[in-house]
Image 1: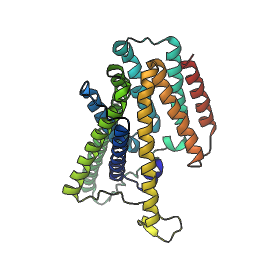
Image 2 (image 1 turned 180 degrees about the vertical axis):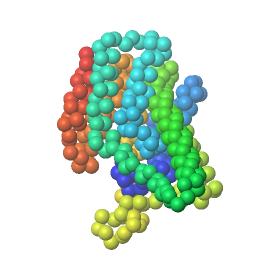
Image 3 (image 1 turned 135 degrees about the vertical axis):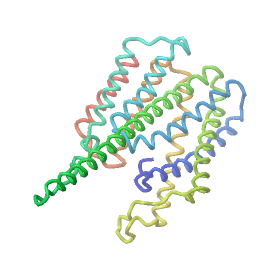
Image 4 (image 1 turned 60 degrees about the horizontal axis):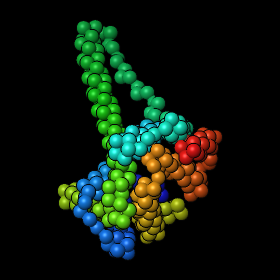
Length: 334
């Protein structure tokens, strides 16, 4: 998905990409569902619907969080949602226990997530200070100049008040979507295990079918609203300039478009495979192992793919983060 995002940047492009991705996931889900014997049941259907809603909300909130929030915060809230919350609920939902060793392993994953995120670009903000308005005073008329000074000072105060309100609004908005992202990830993690715990692994394909059907419906609704009311296209717009330089200003070329859809298809299939086998693993592994192991594996694979696919240099922080993640995963499985 990162490759696709580099070629078609922007929030609405992300919506378009996720719309296409969810459609592909739905097609794959249907194929697997019928290949697996088309077993379905109405029992605990609400868990499937909750899973679908949570996946859609997670995609929406992640799009916004990636634009608004610091990467460290996004990673921490992701871990809280996908690991900490499900672990706290596991004794009540499944009667499972969480040992001190498991807790230590989870803490190590949190530390690793923070270390992975320590990159200069994650902390660099807008360091340029705005030039303060210069007030020119004409000594020829002190009273008139004093009035002008007061008027300009009042305008400065008004602008500062507006800036403070805008900053507070952005803070509250970012906090809301971070919490929403964490809660949606928690719901995804819980439903993956809860469904097979209640119904059994024979209906795994049905669970994933309903999940991705709900995700598709969510993005389809947004795409329809964008098309009707804002005249938006269903297809993503290429924003990355052609590397050859022959197509300036990021014009949509045939090769770029084809490559973008290849990335989307690969990402969609990988997401379905991850969801499918995560649900199977949830039926086998206890919560104290499954949730941290799943997240730890994702962190390790993300770091490796960054280096292998995106040619990012393995920094000291990345290597330390990898080592701590591996140690955390090993401790969890002791």
